[in-house]
Amino acid sequence: MSSDPAPHLVVMGQGYVGLPMALRAAETGIRVTGFDTNETTAAALRSGVSHIGDVSDADLAAGLARGYTATSDPGCIAEADVVIVCVPTPLSADGGPDLAAVIAAADLIGERIRPGVLCVLESTTYPGTTEEVFAPRVAGDRLVVGESVHIAFSPERINPGQTEYGVRNTPKVVGGITPACTERAAAFYERFVDEVVRAKGAREAEMAKLLENTFRHVNIALVNEMVRFSRELGIDLWNAIDCAATKPFGFMAFRPGPGVGGHCIPVDPAYLSHRVRAVLGYSFRMVELAEEVNSAAPIYVAQRAAEALNERALAVNGARILLLGVTYKPDVADLRQTPAEPLAARLLEQGADVSYHDPLVSCWTVEGRELCAEADPYGAAVAADLVVLLQPHRAYDLARLEATGAHILDTRGVLPARGTTTRL
Ligand code: SAJ
Image 1 (cartoon, rainbow, N blue to C red):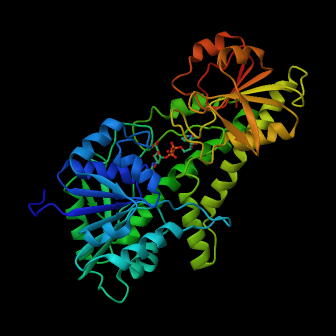
Image 2 (tube, rainbow, N blue to C red):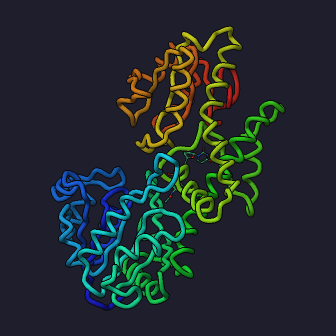
Image 3 (cartoon, rainbow, N blue to C red):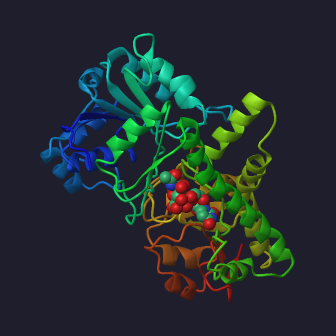
């Protein structure tokens, strides 16, 4: 732990990454200002109202009591000793990186910071972004990186919806533009993170994050492809995975599903494959194939739904189909890139009467059509011609669902494959 006087930290972006980070730092006596371009967000935070599911109003109140504050005035950057940038890095329309928020933040910093400041980018991006895009805007021709300004990259590792790992106990990878930048950033994070891992440089830290999530994307695609031919071979892949998962080393279980959603897994690998193609002129084939397999998963579910109805001489056209769990993963109220959307669109296109239930989604629109939200999933299951279980939220009583006797297509392998339940 450092004995230096507590610095003034400005965290740019007060979303699911920036806000928990700001409040953790404030716990250790660091003076923290949360900057967000959205004044409505900043005002709500100042008033003690959290817009982040994993941050309670009580957590926020404790931060405010320790001196945390929020603002949309970039003037706060001029008083910062440390600036951490936690802004979104979505995909652009052409599937490449959209660094607009990173560039805007870097420009705001470059216009205001005093000499001697540490700036860290946490937004997930392709290797080279910190050095080629972020640092030049921050330092400009006014400051010298590694001397009058220190710049590093440190990937965010916030995992929405789970509480076992938080900012403090998730190891923090840090890589600087120069060794001095690495050391300065590491020393700063050591004030409020239990374990800090020094990368060789910013590019290695950027790549570490993309490796973490590309690893998931590719392995999810592996089982999403295997589940298709396993079924045709008469093999229960779900059981095979459970068996393989008993291996105490050298294996990590991933399971088939209706597709890969969220703002991390389907996005981060695309940053890498786009960079490889843009700089080196050839494709990162594993990622491109994984994207092909995973993006086809919702359509495969629609095909399996048609097969399940067909077994009872029912057509998709006119069938009452109930989707259970439409968020991108269980117990997270987030619809970003949810595979439920392309699935619902395909079923609607085929003439199905689609309704849904999700305890976390009160209103859901697919391609401009607001779908009926069922109040009672079990009663709706009985009335449906087919139930498609997408996300097994903890709120669902799966035994009760099975006991309804409804015809269920289980896309997660969480129900016994018997009676009127069939698996993907
Ligand atoms: N999925 C499958 N099969 C699996 C695992 C996931 O189909 O075996 C699907 C999920 O349903 C979801 C998508 O893939 O639609 C992504 O799931 P995820 O479990 O990877 O959840 P995310 O997107 O919230 O990923 C985050 C990541 N955290 C950060 O980037 C900081 C990831 O690195 C974490 O490993 C992951 O949470 C986690 O472990 O929950």
